[in-house]
Length: 116
Image 1 (cartoon, rainbow, N blue to C red):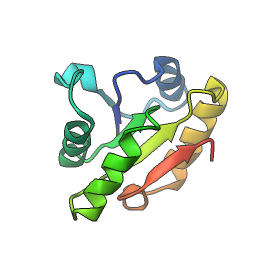
Image 2: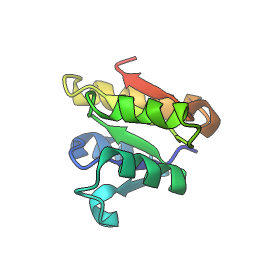
Image 3: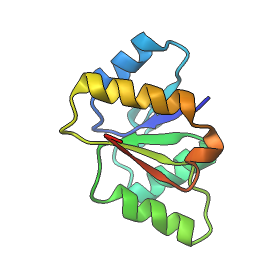
């Protein structure tokens, strides 16, 4: 099952809703790993090293850095980019569908945009 690295400013109401709907989901928080002030390339590298998909709202800088890793031949475990404008319930529903329909392999080297 997909495991996540939660970006610093990600809406925790979404994470809480995901956890309530599926307690088996695993989340690691950047702040708990001492990465609260880390750069985007460092975050993506850490996620790849630990086999975690990044859960973020950062539409401006994360996708270019993610695809730069792919272009450089570096591992990129994937990004779930959830729009800040998306209602929380819809975000929970769509991320849950993706988690249960996608394999870790299908997430690699891709940025998945929500809403789908």
